[in-house]
Length: 148
Image (tube, rainbow, N blue to C red; front, side, top):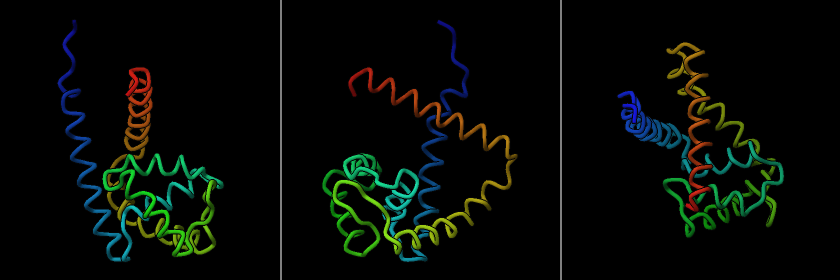
């Protein structure tokens, strides 16, 4: 069996530290707007996967996030609906208020993202995004085949 390049062993740890650090930055940044990251994440999913995103699909994706689970996700969606940000029982859409909030938050979140990523070559960022998407896709397919 060939020896794996040492960078393979560093990949998971680097990814985990990056995710943890970026989540901390995002939480701090969104707190200035009195917005929980879970709210931002839900609005972002609906905006990018909608219109008419199936509530079951949305719940499933949200339940896989670090700070939500099968018990907290329905409460989040109920709160967003009560706040007038989303609408729909089986298919979920952003309301006009939800669309406006999402747009404002997207612009707000883009500031630190742009500041952070602009220090790198665009091609490197594009390669990183493609690599992470491919790794995610392959790991998901492998997990599905293994029945996970």
